[in-house]
Image (cartoon, rainbow, N blue to C red; front, side):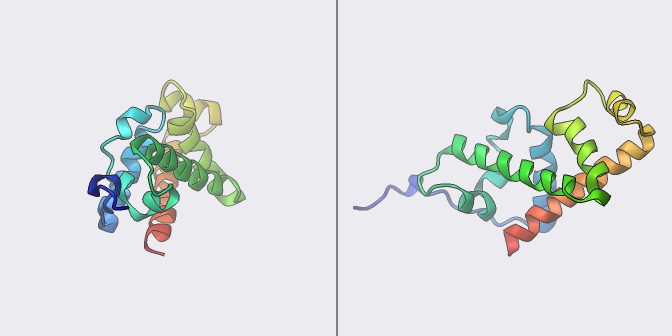
Length: 134
C-alpha cells in the first residue's frame, strides 16, 4: 500500500539561529496553539520524531507544546536555573497580566526578571537545539 506524499511531513532543517527564533516564537504562542500552525518547528526533526507517523498539524502542535513545557520544566529541576524557569513560566506558560507584574509576583526587580527571562528562553532553545541535532 503506497501512501500519498502529503501524508508524510517533510522535515525542515533550520539553522541554529532560525531554530532559536522559532523557539522564541513558539513560546510567545504557547497559550494560543492555533498561532503555532505556521511555526517551522512543526516540521523539525525534533517534533516530527516526537509524533506518530500519521500525525496531523494538531498532533505536531501538541508535541511542540509538550517539548517546550518539558524543556522549561528541566530548568525548574535545577536550583540554579529555577529563577529562569519562573520567569518563563510567568511570561509564557502561565502568564501574568504583564511582565512588570510577573517581576513583582516573583519579588525581583524588573531588570533582573528580563535577564532571567532572556536566559531561560535561550536555555530552552539550546536544550531543544541539542535534541534536534543529537
